[in-house]
Image 1 (cartoon, rainbow, N blue to C red):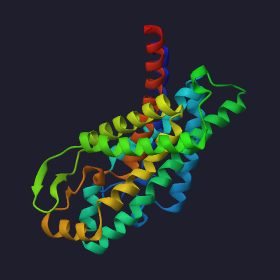
Image 2 (image 1 turned 180 degrees about the vertical axis):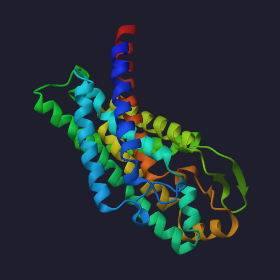
Image 3 (image 1 turned 90 degrees about the horizontal axis):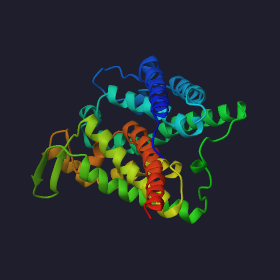
Length: 297
């Protein structure tokens, strides 16, 4: 259950592939006109042709990553695309850069309304990478290299319970870890500043790692469902913490870089990419924990 040096090199090579292709080679497809602006679909920041090319590239990256990490391609290769998307997220600006361009009540409402569902596109990109991994495995007539990749429960109630547990864990953990300056507010209790990209990445990674650990440990559900829950967290956060009266109050009393909750300062591209990486890690940590428990006894 320990990672060998060769497997660590496989992981590094697969992540490097995703980062190189999506974070650098494909950067012109997603880069905003303003170098300081955030990577987003909102306002036509990424056109339909670029979206299609990114999905195709993700598929090819997943397929190539399978062969790079063979015979553990099924286990390792899925991290290539989210690693690349995470690099894209880190190269772009933050949520505040979008707020400054839409700092009126109608502007913020339109922005948040669009961002609620933008995560679906980034999840599609990650899914294309996973399909590429699966297609490469079938093409090569290979199979999963680990017994732990098989036998996950697909009972609907377990899947639903794992998704709910992940969303709750994500909201709680991100609230604890994604921190910046916190200021007292007489109406809201407190507001928080825009967390840095590193802080956001760490918080989301740990949050969904926790969710995937719980999903595997208690519901025998693999990392795909906790990772997919990353699209639900912005929906909840931007609905619960960004209501019209609250937005109007924030615009009137606080600068654009302050939010009612830190979770409202996370872009969909940041949420999905780091969530997937965290979910995979949490899944394998749960397996390792069970292995350790059995052998310790």
